[in-house]
Amino acid sequence: MEYVTLNNGVEMPILGFGVYQVPPDQTEEAVTAALAAGYRSLDTAAAYQNEDAVGRAVRNSGIARNELFITTKLWIQDNGEATTQRAFDTSLQFLGMDYVDLYLIHQPFGDVYGEWRAMEKIHHDGGARAIGVSNFSSDRLVDLIIHNEVTPAVNQIETNPYYQRAVENQLMSDRGVRHESWAPFAEGKNNLFSDPTLTDIAAAHDKSIAQVVLRWLIQRGVVVIPKSVRPDRMAENMQVFDFELSPQEMAAIADLDTGHSLFFDHRDPEAVARLSGVTME
Ligand SMILES: NC(=O)c1ccc[n+]([C@@H]2O[C@H](COP(=O)([O-])OP(=O)(O)OC[C@H]3O[C@@H](n4cnc5c(N)ncnc54)[C@H](OP(=O)(O)O)[C@@H]3O)[C@@H](O)[C@H]2O)c1
Image (tube, rainbow, N blue to C red; front, side, top):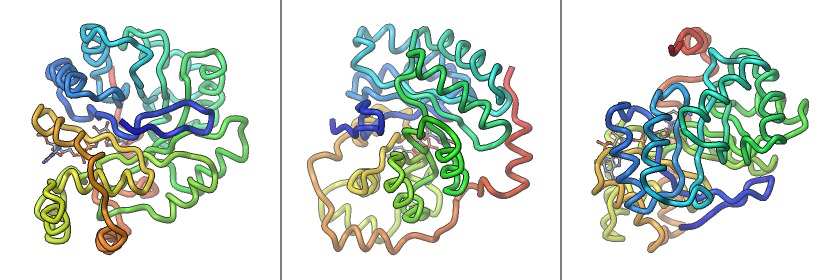
């Protein structure tokens, strides 16, 4: 496994396992299989409603806590300074852990400054080894950095061959924020798994399209957290450290960029209203 060093010196695996849309009743089994396949970084969120199942799988694995890198996220309904601390405590309770490695603001809406102040305190108190954000556009990210004490360690944003985020990647690199990809496979949209360019590159290396996509992101220094409920794919998605894409292949993939989200734009007012209305019990 390769690691990246976050801006506060914490080491994070460049490849982890995401559990979005893994049904809560299947998450323990999926995470157990992922840990057996060798994943040591797990990405969950309060909004995924499967933190408890992640925690059970971790405990039952017998793997030492300090060998794992656990990320969870704060949902919008808990925005605000006091609420953030309570929401964090609830996440720790669900996970059955006394700290997380990375705590992220899930969405850039609501009282993110209150959230960030609370997260800075959580970080100072040892509850989160690193803190960061998700779905922040560059203007919001820079604003947060300039007006607060701690610079986010990570910004987790949609990044895949059809939405590559090269400008954001440069900005984050300049500001010391690690770029993390969500939906590296675009959840299969745009027929990614039969894309002709990716098919040719995969054939040249005797690899799968999934492996080429993860390798392309890793060669850009982007942290990846692919999701699968299938053990064969979990194993496949880890076999990305034994080959290298050439500059020509990297350039051919760069040409696939459309510059647009395949899901929705977080700056679209309708998306802001819709996501802000999503609540959990
Ligand atoms: N911060 C955010 O707002 C946000 C948003 C979305 C996601 N995320 C995080 O990012 C993680 C990854 O993103 P994602 O789950 O949305 O999408 P993704 O990883 O791009 O795609 C997952 C899909 O690809 C399939 N798949 C996985 N490996 C494959 C392989 N080797 N060959 C063929 N198909 C394969 C999976 O199917 P099977 O499961 O059937 O194998 C699943 O349908 C999430 O789990 C979550 O942790 C964060």
